[in-house]
Image (cartoon, rainbow, N blue to C red; front, side, top):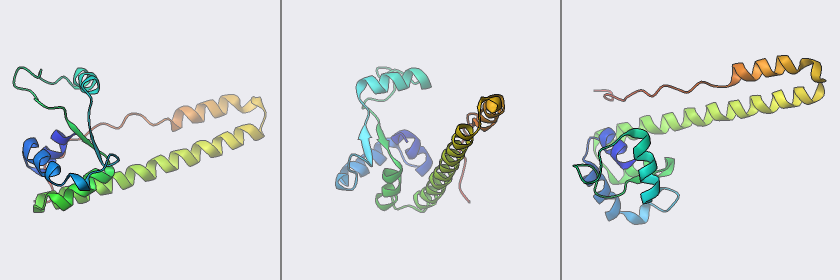
Length: 147
């Protein structure tokens, strides 16, 4: 997740979030957080339509946090809102992990069945794959947490 998205969720300025992280940088190894390269940021900006750097936009490349980095933020951002947001985010990561695992298991079982039976059932297997293919999950904006 981008630093600006997390700052919005935690109710702090991106600058404050980044300062806090940099003051506690030993808690954020490379698998917890990294900074986007100029090229990565340009590609991302073209996809999400952000303001240009010279016209009131970001002046520094964004930090990106993994699941572990998001969890670590709760130890450096100590507000009640930070704790509640962190709990919600960690629950979402858990649900995503379970969803991905169940899709992997289903795909594996389908492949095993397909290898057992001859090609006369190919149409059936193709139809099942289409049904199993998950449509993109619409993004919902988190408005407030429990208050």
